[in-house]
Image (cartoon, rainbow, N blue to C red; front, top):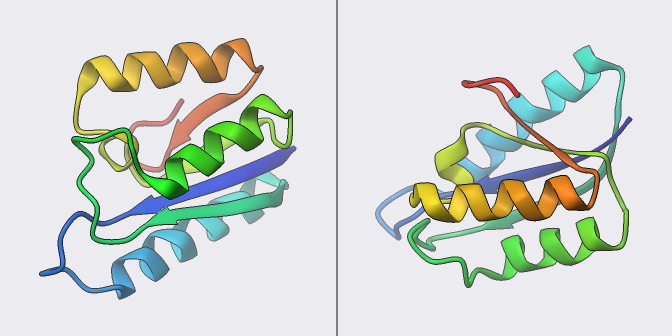
Length: 107
């Protein structure tokens, strides 16, 4: 299974280590699942209230190209703080044949 990892922190008040920590936890889960990392995407000091984030946009372009089968992230709020945006992401990723799985909520 080809897995993309997405990590984000929202403010300059937070540490860049947050991205590293989220990624490390996701890498451990990829190993448990027996998958392979197809890409790691991140956005530093960018709010989850906006969908206009370079890392998220790159993730979506790669999903459209069929580069991976699953997006793994720490929690849904890493993808977006807006439930309507999460629903839109889910719908688009589902259309591309990509599942969303989080460490805290599952699939």
